[in-house]
Length: 569
Ligand SMILES: NC(=O)C1=CN([C@@H]2O[C@H](COP(=O)(O)OP(=O)(O)OC[C@H]3O[C@@H](n4cnc5c(N)ncnc54)[C@H](OP(=O)(O)O)[C@@H]3O)[C@@H](O)[C@H]2O)[C@@H](O)CC1
Ligand SMILES: Nc1ncnc2c1ncn2[C@@H]1O[C@H](COP(=O)(O)OP(=O)(O)O)[C@@H](O)[C@H]1O
Ligand SMILES: [K+]
Image (cartoon, rainbow, N blue to C red; front, side, top):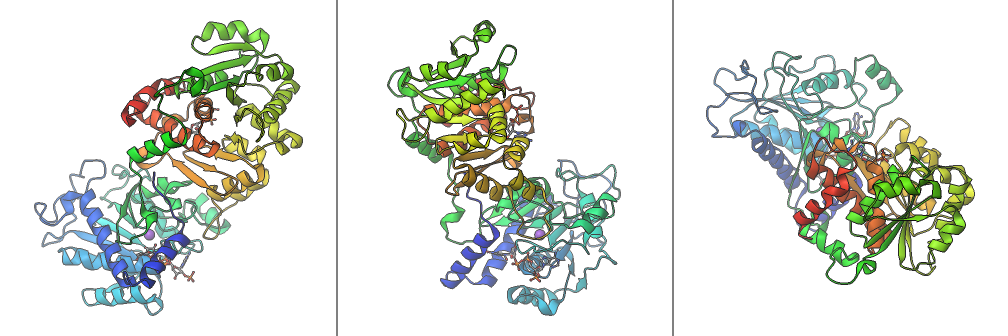
């Protein structure tokens, strides 16, 4: 678990460190530049000083160097192009240029903007570079030659991006053409060899708070025509101190390629990364993940409501998830007509007829039931609306016994259709919408999120989920590769399935139902709603990573024992 920062938080941390006398801005910039160079040599050891013949093969992005590359100049030096912008991101670029030059590279430096207006630390590094080499203007009319260079450094814009990069768009398109945004070189399509792009802090054009490219309608039109791009795709992004929200949200992870976080020596707890052992301990302290003693009902009892005949698969997946995640007992409540179908499918999961709301109320006289799941495959008719109303009533804070409830799928549709039901939401609920369900539940918020991001910092999925959680008065888990989980008090987490946690094979029918089951099971085990949602989402991704491609929803619960074993649970 890593804490992600907004650009403003990062600036505040930087300012505090400088104000405390711990470090100067210039020292931070030097460390940032050094971090970038170290990350480059780490990523492409063949470029590091002393790694064989200088100017040898070009760096490989997918493990193979283009055989015909002849990028070295006459004396065999490696070659870099450094594209600097008008702020401190550009300042970092001048440091990188100097350090590469000191390492024997041939470096071409370009500046977008007016050198006289550079902020103080960037200007110092501009001048330092000026003693070693020239700075050419970066203009869209005369873009630098990128072919046959070993590396392109994108130091145009970082956390200070405020507006669309309209003027630079056509040039950015060329940079994007260097990579296919999945991090691999387009060697077949683009020849001669195009170099990998290393973004300093974040690819230029991406908002560090939202992960969204900043562009307006004029740029959008040019993008549609194929004559412009909104940002510069990178193979490697080197950020500082801690990752920013934009590295994890929206398309941020896609454009960053691979991410490295360089330590620039600021002593702030914000850079804390919790080791797995600590995570497990936290989880076991909050709920009771370890089954050290007790009987099945002391580990929680979940009730999952199911739909009619032929519609029970989703609820069965959720039930299996709840059981595997450790609820001591799980019962599936279904309409009488669906009993045979479910009985034929279930063994460890128990089964109970629940025809309508009155039957649910009778079932809930069993005070051992402490977690409910409503919605997967349930239906959206009057019966289901009444069941949902009963669930919300039976789980309201202060009721005895205390119960949590996960509202997913059809329950979310019912909530979107029925204001009175929505008004009954409370702090024991967890809503788990995907983007479509989110838009039905919170249309105005979804509209804000879908509106073009024309200035930075842009409205983000974190902003949207926080606003939704506040309005609903409960935890909202907004699904996707960048799952955001927020509570009404603005607590927020992101379960980012990007970089080394990328698991696109989770986009498979029924995987959301299993997630609802995981969260329900964790609620049964005593996790608080926010913690259950965070842990459920995290375990869901861990199961997908552990299983790998080819996964279908049924595999997710079955992978949990392996994941738990790896965690030492
Ligand atoms: N925080 C830290 O601890 C550390 C930070 N460090 C580095 O500093 C970076 C942040 O620097 P930064 O704040 O100067 O912002 P940056 O991204 O360089 O851009 C600002 C400039 O761009 C301009 N501008 C904006 N949008 C524009 C557009 N569309 N088109 C044209 N111009 C546009 C904007 O103009 P303005 O809006 O002011 O008119 C301003 O001139 C950070 O990413 C990291 O690399 C490291 O050195 C070490 C530690
Ligand atoms: N590209 C992706 N990478 C990682 N996780 C994803 C991706 N796409 C979807 N998911 C996850 O898969 C699950 C899909 O849930 P949902 O949309 O409700 O599907 P279903 O209704 O079929 O169960 C969610 O947990 C979501 O976060
Ligand atoms: K950048």
